[in-house]
Image: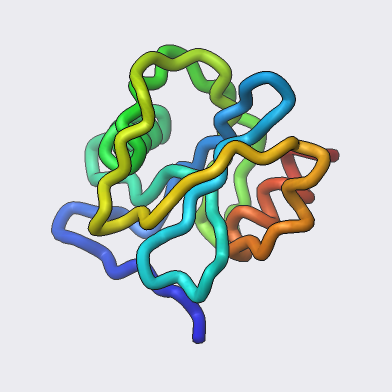
Length: 130
């Protein structure tokens, strides 16, 4: 059973996703109702937002982290996903429980051993770890 995100009013079809990196680890989140797969924070960009604004808003909503700087690393045009690396943020993780069940910091070298969403897997393989 695939996990689908429904478009809310004002959403575009494009998602901005962030790889939060700290001390050789990456932040993985488990979306509520996601068949036990892990993803990376982020979500749909709203009409009128830049891809960075969408990333900053979605990550603050989902995990409570306020991004100070994000670096663009790639775009999957076919799947409409834009990927960033985030190394500079403030705040403590506070989950939006309607969307995110849990989180974990995983050693980057072990991330692909986790059951990942297609979005997270593609981001790791095609943009982050290449």
